Length: 447
Image (tube, rainbow, N blue to C red):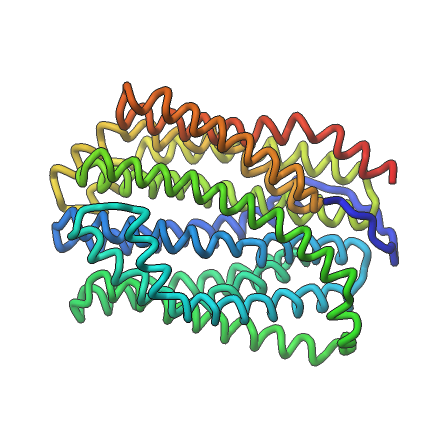
């Protein structure tokens, strides 16, 4: 979008390597606990030695992510708008942005809970998997969707904190979320023998605990600040701005998860063993994504702050520094995955056939970090600047490239072709945004 907002206080600032790392490292630590949760979930199911249960967990997680990532605007949109208000030193607007997001999150979460039977049935129909996989997937979706209100409110809380650059508090809440999730998943899944239902219940409990902790922090903080008026909170122009921004982010998120869904659905069509192996390998893709999530968050906050402060020099330096650190971190993540990957696969599953199949396609998963670094860094830049329309359009273009590559390579090369198409998708997302960057910066600072 990049709309022009009223400026309260220009405060140019210098972006340094220390600032980038101060934002990125805590979020990297927090983000790395998320794939750890996925590894623990996979470990719990893997102890049953049943590829169908493993596939059902993976398929259920995909359906859940398709639904919830559609609401990622509650984090990304809040993040960008709060960062810009922070750059303008507009404290009341920061509170108002959060309150708008909170209302949308609570209402949307209740709506999703009411739609649980329909969502479960639609997910099963779309995945079109074997009966044993479908049964496990149904249990996972129905139990985990109970966390919808808490999960969406957590998105809004995290967006507010990150927009202000408060990575320490955000890290604390992510540790609470993932720590409680791991503990409950092991307790309910293994020790009480609930299996897939225990994993889903563990996640639900963790979301609720984190929401309570986050809201207590913000309620205490807001009580010490001047109260923002209801008129400002529900200002019609601000609400229209939020919905325009969020609409573009919803489309982008939906297309992104659509590509992931198609990847997993195509895996299911290649057989239960291939689906289970790709589910294992997807943990390495998520590992790369969450590793780079810290750089994306740093780019988002620093660029949003620079836009709010009308500081072009800070914006360009933020882009350069986050790109440099992104490529360095991607290289490190790939080396680490190549070194320790086999141990992780053994830890995830005890099924020898799944392990052998995953090892065969292992290099494709490990190389997703360098392929995706530009996509994540540029996404942070464009979300922070609220240039959402460009982000939406390039995602649609990249999705078309992905589908073309999928039909070109997957029919001939099977799972190798499927992974090749996903790499092309990652590269297309980053390069297309990079090509638009110079023009968007020029337009933003000519207004």
